[in-house]
Length: 316
Ligand code: NAP
Ligand code: ZN
Ligand code: ZN
Image (tube, rainbow, N blue to C red; front, side):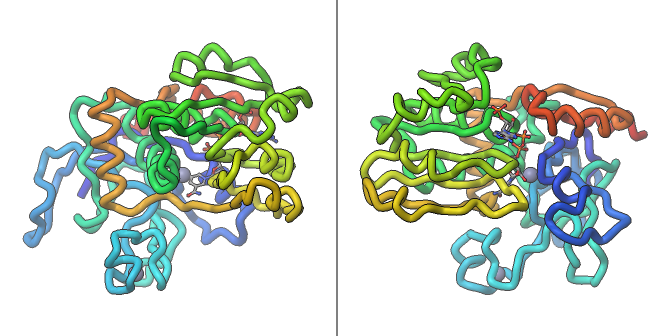
């Protein structure tokens, strides 16, 4: 049993509760960026103890037997992972997420949250952190690599911080320059407005990796043209609408278009330890639970700096 202390607000929560990704098994409590303390453990539990500071991300179980699970890629479980909310659990009930006071999770899907990560800022690492860390690690962001991050919201600002910590040269592609000072403070070298057509000429053929975190459809072909030889554009943003691809935009420079979904449990622990070691934490606005609807409206207007986190004590 975990007594939840803080819960982040991910744009996926908003897509879900608004039914943008399909039917919703109401009543549903969302929230998959969870941190708190262990208050009780079952008799067979060995990985966590009462009092430990722990986190829960986007999934709470998987089959544990398929090749992907055995490879530590539980998010790609062949039988589908059990999502933290809105999934049918092994006992047939619908899982419920983190905008709540307590949660019970199998120990194998519970992460250790290092004590030197500020408590109130740790929750967004459990989704925004791992969702950006995983593709950056997989596609080898690091010294000598030019990485662009499209959209500087919850995921995007973590993509910037993590890619910078990995040693890459990072450019932010945001709708406007209104957050430029923040982007540069997070370690980005360059910051361009995508509302300015000149941006797409200036940056043509430049990047090894582009991480698209935008929650809405964008002209993806315009971004492909910013990739250098063998460059890859990874979409982690999950708009409900399709992104039509012009294959000709992929032909030049032998470009690739990829997707990526959260990260495995071991990799999530690796990301938490990486952030602790590099002194990286999300930028948050702490809110009480009664401010969630107003926070959703601000997220939808790209007016989030850079993650809303619910102080779960306001629910007690
Ligand atoms: P967010 O905080 O709302 O950030 C999205 C950012 O995209 C905004 O801050 C804005 O950045 C930009 N943006 C929004 N609307 C736009 C538009 N119409 N045109 C161009 N840019 C726009 O959302 P988030 O929580 O980071 O989540 C981002 C997306 O990732 C969501 O779709 C979410 O569901 C998805 N997601 C996927 C995974 C996965 O496993 N793949 C995991 C978590 C979340 P600027 O103001 O800088 O332009
Ligand atoms: Zn999320
Ligand atoms: Zn599996």
